[in-house]
Each structure stands twice: as C-alpha cells, then as structure tokens.
Image (cartoon, rainbow, N blue to C red; front, side, top):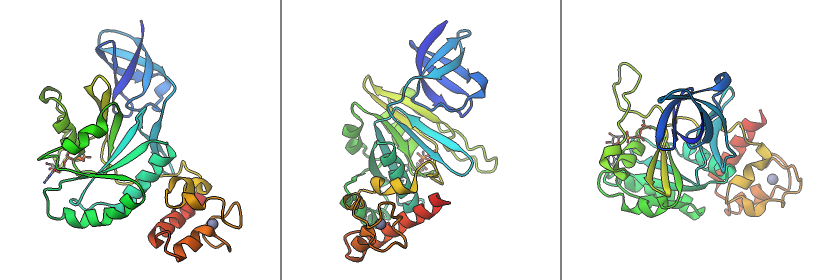
Length: 287
Ligand SMILES: Nc1nc2c(ncn2[C@@H]2O[C@H](COP(=O)(O)OP(=O)(O)OP(=O)(O)O)[C@@H](O)[C@H]2O)c(=O)[nH]1
Ligand SMILES: [Zn+2]
C-alpha cells in the first residue's frame, strides 16, 4: 500500500514518517539519504510499523550545509529559522553569520533568539548582537527556564526550525513549547564518557494544526560550499545596496580597484568585520 506522509524524525539513514495518523520506521530505496526532517514523501507500507520511502515532493525550502566532503540536510519545508544563541557556553559569531547567510540563500526568514537571559553574562552578548538588529534581523530575548512568551507569536502559522550550537537550549525551548506528554526526551550523548543529554537527530513536532517546529542537533560548523562566491553579496543585507556598483561586474571585493563594497567599508557604511567576513568566505569558496 502506498501512502503520503511527512518525515518527522531523521536519523540520517533511517527516518520516521507520519502518514494518516500512523508512524512508520522507514528505510529508503537504494540507500538514498537525501531526505530531511519536514520532507513530504511517498512511502510504500510494508507492515504496521515499517515502510520504504520512494521519493519526496517538491520542497518549499531546504536548509542545508555543505563542507568539502558532505552535504548535510538540516530541515525541509520550513518557513522560519530560529538561531538559538546564549551567552553560555561561549557563542560563535562566525557560526551565526554563516547560518544567517545559509538562511538568506535558502530564502527562509531568520530570527535570532537569545536564550538564558537569566544569566548575567547575557548583557555582553546582547551588546554584540546589536549590530545584527541594525542589519535588520529580529533579535528576541527570553529564558527557556522562566518565560518563553516572546517566542510564541513568531511560531504561529509557521514551520520553524531551531538551529544553533550545542548547549544553547534548543531542546529545553522545544520542551517548554510542547504539552508535557510530547516532551522531547534528551538523547544521551553517544560519547561514552560524557553521558550528557544532546540531540543526535532532528525531530518535527506539531505545536497546533498550523504551527510546526523542528529541533535539530547542535552544530559546530556551518559549511557553505554550496554557495557561489559571486552570490554572497546578495545574502548580506548590508552589502545589497552596493550590488552592481563595483567597477568590474565580476568584482570579488578583495583586490580590485573601484570596489564599491570596499569603498563603503572605508566610509564606515559597512562594518570592517563584515567586509572581512565577506572576503574570508570568498576566499574559501573560490578554492
Ligand atoms: N540558565 C539557563 N539554562 C538553560 C536555559 N535553557 C537551557 N538551559 C540549560 O542549558 C543546557 C543545554 O540545554 P539544551 O536544551 O540541551 O541545549 P541544546 O541546544 O538542545 O543542545 P544540543 O541538543 O546539544 O544541540 C541544559 O543544561 C539546560 O538546562 C535557560 O533559559 N537558562
Ligand atoms: Zn567589489
């Protein structure tokens, strides 16, 4: 029997698919792994618990990262990305910047969430994030342990995904949003010595009929090898106004004379650290 369903858990090679109110433990044809949590799929049901995924339907969006060797799909069909950050453990601005670029490239609306506002270290992190507000990004602050009210309106009617470093509180926020019965149970870290609860697979939850949420495993790196160096300026909101103004249409904004982006950085219209970020990514993607 064939059914139409949605991937609600992705273990990389195995997937849980929800179809007509039932869940199936699914493998794929030919060991395909290019499916993500959130994908709408056709399955061939084998018995009450097992099925095979035959293919996916067109995606509205796909968030993924790519390094030299591998493509890692994070979530499909999401309309909003929530980058979960906190002052503790030490947040990486590089990771945040890369995630924002990936979101812009996938044409998915990103929001920066500052969790753990109950910790005094938060003030300094919020100062650093002021620059991102200036770029036009929404920054919301909350404490998963105290009050998550500011998050709720952003989730309504959306399929959202929590993305971020390990330990920022994605699973704690997910649990706070879900009715108790559905609470995410932290997976015990596979590293034998740690025994720490850490998320090892992406999972999709239904907040209500129209609002869905994917919690994804913590990231350490955000590979952007799938992007073209010449497209980067389109994904950086502060650079966009200068597109087409460089002397050379294929300007890489590094050494070329007449570069409008470098000129803007010299005038202070673009922050120096942002120009450096663009140049660093350009070098990386130009091989
Ligand atoms: N003080 C404080 N601690 C928090 C808050 N939210 C989460 N934590 C703690 O931060 C730690 C990490 O939280 P998790 O929810 O497991 O983090 P995660 O982002 O899901 O981590 P991974 O699953 O590894 O990606 C836990 O010890 C939480 O109790 C908060 O608002 N305030
Ligand atoms: Zn230029």
